[in-house]
Amino acid sequence: MLAFASNQLSLAAKLHVNVPDFQEFHDLNVCGHRGSLYNEPENTVQGFRHAANLGCDSVELDVFLLKDDKLVVFHGGGDDKNPGQTNSYFGVEGSILDYNYEEVQHLHLRTDCEELACPKDKLSTAYVPLLEEVLLDAKKSGIYVKIELKGPKTEVPTLELVERLGMIDQCSFASFDHKKVAKIRALRPEKKLDGSYRYITGCLYSDEVPDNFVEDSIANGASEVHLKYDTCTKERVASIHQKGLRSMAWFRGPIGMKEDISSRYLDVGNEDELMYRTLLSTCVMSLCVNKPDVLLSLLARVR
Image (cartoon, rainbow, N blue to C red; front, side, top):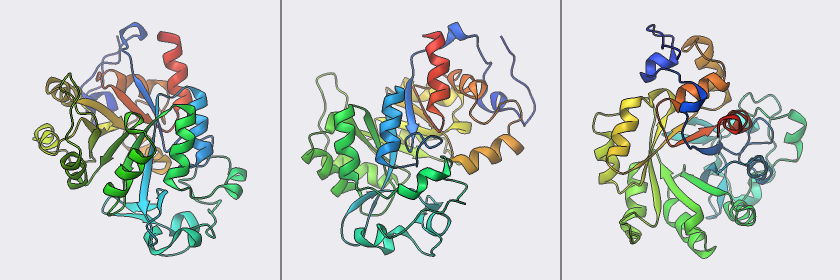
């Protein structure tokens, strides 16, 4: 057993865990964050298809509603309160919300965008896809889709699209805006025979996790709690499971992760096996990662 360090630059210390030997690992849902973004352009059909081919259990994507009421899959710059900024991705000021779908197709991804971590030659043919296109391809591959309701007014049209495509059992809905989660639950409160919700929803939390985060999630009708990877302490995971909810740890994008391992956590690499082992030590049920191939390779040796 590797005892966790007591200093502030240790991820293990931050999560209150010891890093176990391989045999102590548990079953895990491997989720490709925005697909498999180090291999293919993020939030694209080919990226999600690559994640499915790798063997991921699920993928995570981000949804916006454009001016012409088209749902697209895109991340962009900005923060959770002002997402979808286009400058760092396309070199034009503004937001993806300023466009209709036809206009979006004329935007070209910047090869110098650090957040776009895939081989740069693949960016020339990448485009912002419709959510429907992504879901139809996922329906063929069978991979589960975790939909983050990123932009405003996305909850109802996204819900209606998933239902129209007959993919309720293959999709979930999550958001940092817990009012969106509550709205999905109010519209679709149905439960299965075992008492669990049929429509899976998740409350996302970032750096600031309130003391009552589990109660807040339950009050908003969530099925799952999604914590930022370095706030996913062993105690928080246990409290989520005690209330019958599922847990997930999500990782920052490429720029954020590089910042973290260079200045915050010196006991792990940038989503290397040791970092993943550290998260697994919390007993979290799912990891939403940028390098699913690394995680899957690790798990293949211990399952």
